[in-house]
Image (tube, rainbow, N blue to C red; front, side, top):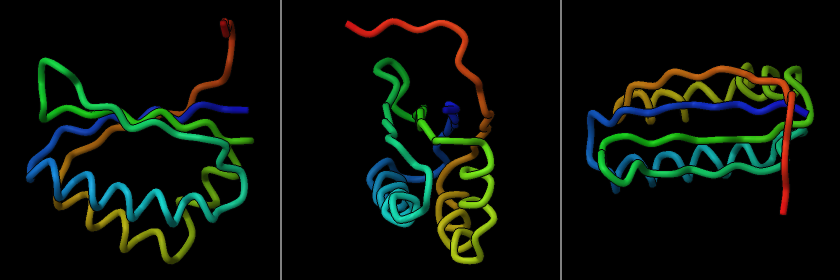
Length: 96
């Protein structure tokens, strides 16, 4: 399992960004390997969001991002936010 962390800084309206994100997420939910995700908005900076997604493997994530239909979703989001993302592997964890 891997964690994909993507940080967004809005250049557009929050409502439009959240709608575009939700449409992109609907597409990604149909792709093999996505376990779960959480989009969070920074409380003291409403133009800053982070998405944390768990995938079964880095290959599954890369295949989803390389899917021909993903480009349209990415374009819509890029028009509303700048982003940086990275893939992380688990090291230590805790769950209550």
